[in-house]
Length: 131
Image (cartoon, rainbow, N blue to C red; front, side):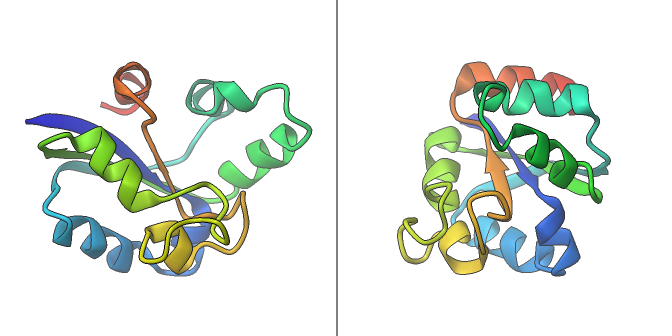
């Protein structure tokens, strides 16, 4: 068994989709073992999306990510990181696989409902921010 981290973004909360998204995760046979509501700080965003720091949209992403509360959760299961990433889908909802969370609910590359840890290294950094 392994762990992965997910984060429901402000657009998910504003659109009241959190239960639908969490239900999709539960039906994928990943067990949610920790969950809490958080307000992201800029320091959190710098760690979670460090690969985007030099992108033209980064300041907009900071504003968006801090615009409302988020829900952070940890799932447990066989190959949890890979399975959660597959279920989440590609960052652009219009290019994400049909049936993924982002394809189902996302509206743009930024407002794509959810974040998931890319790999074990990212998981460890992100986990230490919240738990």
